Amino acid sequence: MWKLNKYARFVQSDSSSIVTKDEKAEWEYFDNTTFPLELTLADRGHLLVSHGSTIMESYNLTMSQRYLRGQSKGDSMIIFYHMQDVSHRFRIKFAASEIKTSHDVCRECAEKMANYFPVKAIVTTESVNHENTSDKTILHGEVTLSDLANVVTRTSKNLLPTVYNNMPTDTTNIGVLMKLCLSDPSFPAYVEQVEKELDNLALNANA
Image (cartoon, rainbow, N blue to C red; front, side, top):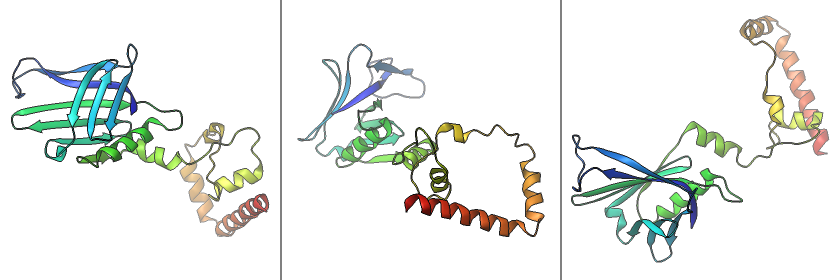
């Protein structure tokens, strides 16, 4: 069972089962402020979306690859249903758990659903950045020179506090500065020496 922040279903304005370009349709939204929103994937192969005691979606997943497909993106998912002349779609946005982010919860659910019907994961810059940082820890308190050296040389998976991500210095002329440095014949040797000193600091920290 996964907790949801939001659920939306595509609702048609008339009683027909097919939406054409000339017919009006809109999304009907629900959130978890009044009643809990939950998605359940039962072991016996049944998908349920509930809003409090109300069942919003219910699908038997036997042979569901014939009529269900899904797309996941970040912490959200859209599921499409199509059988004969009946079409339906709904969207869900996952909530974070005590130990997992909403992105991780969505990915976990998508992997479970993929055992029953196709689920395509759409990779975004946000999700890539999330995956790259999800296994890293932000340093707190006093940050030593050794800590800095380990992060800069990428020998540590830790992240520096946000204060180290700020650049108060004007970077307007940074391109000119780099060209001046590169035009200096001694600059490569200087960079090499800096790298050696960083490695030494990192090694001393791990010794």
